[in-house]
Length: 183
Image (tube, rainbow, N blue to C red; front, top):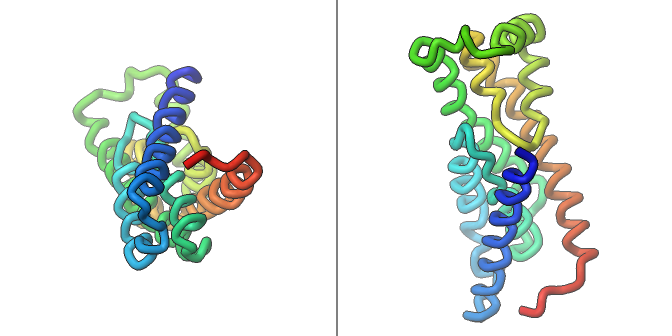
């Protein structure tokens, strides 16, 4: 599982490098995309968070691209991305809500423990599960627990905001420490 996640992160970072290479090769500055960078961040983050079982981290590199290359405001990029991320989690919510009837999840080991945990901790549980960066399982758990959607989205959005803030802020700092790319 760890190897799978490392491979997905490597592929996503490879797309980021390819994207930067193509921009340098065709002499396209990131500032030309500044007017639509927020829209790009919103669309890519929404799509990446809509995937349920495949952790896609490409949107993180798009956020760092918008901040570093397009000179967009860090807080606005994270605000746009966190709203899109929370809305993208709705697919997981409905998969958990309707999937319980289809997949008979009661037979899955640990299912009752997770549902009980979600029902016991409710919004705090959603907040904590939404903070972890690997997969977007909060929507599945909230939907399977039959938590109302507003009780799901309300704690999911601030958790996404905090997660994206730390990843973009420190990710940008780490990228600035690395030697510059040759392109």
